[in-house]
Image (cartoon, rainbow, N blue to C red; front, side):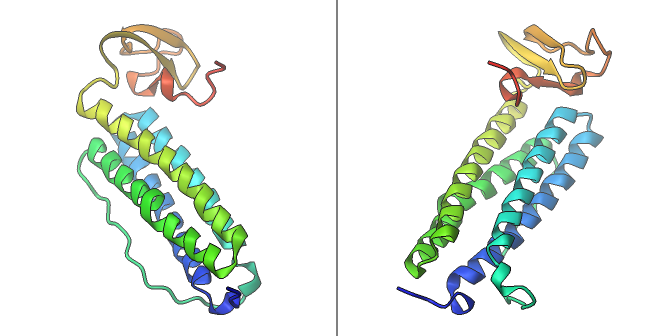
Length: 199
């Protein structure tokens, strides 16, 4: 059905998504600070990396609202307050929020946009939902490793990368200090999470 964009649900859903992504970016930036304060520099980097992707999502949704430039869009929404005590709890909260975006929110927004004939917006909702699913899985795996105390090792031989200098350590536990740059263990990232492994 043909719908005037200025009177559409899609217009409101785009603004809700923009607001949600903007808040997620700030929540992850705040979580990154907590991780830094605890010496978990690689967890902080993952939060910041994800925060930057949320900024990109917000930018995409905002661009789709361009024809309404100069107007104000009123929305009602509910957003989480994630101020958990531990990094594992913060990661679990982030996992939950990303799951909701992936499974429920963006699917419904995409369906509404498709019904109203806004196919570019529908595509953005569906595609970004898939990215949120990746975020969900990443946060969940990291939380599990912290909960099980296996982030820096746990028996089987694996690899870690020093995110400061790039040194790759293979063993059953990450070293307390990087033998190359002498940065603390908090800079070691499980190699499976490295963005540019070259494999």
